[in-house]
Image 1 (cartoon, one colour):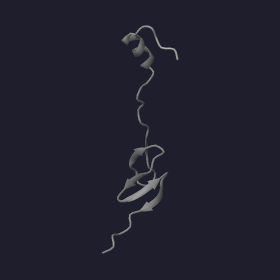
Image 2 (cartoon, helix red, strand yellow):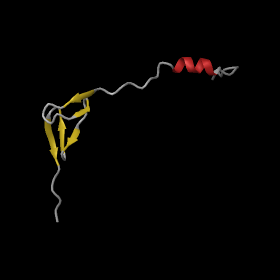
Image 3 (cartoon, rainbow, N blue to C red):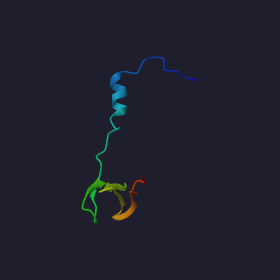
Image 4 (cartoon, rainbow, N blue to C red):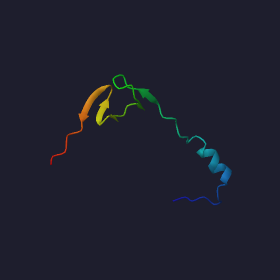
Length: 64
């Protein structure tokens, strides 16, 4: 298997890595709760789980 004869410079590696950037997260406002959340993700509001403005799951009461 071929191996490089000489070491790559730090500048050469940095040039290759310039395209790897962290992108900003897109936020949306929920239509039913009015809460800001990350797009395409379910979010919790007042103990209830919402996705696309619809109630998906509700927290069940604890049994004693």
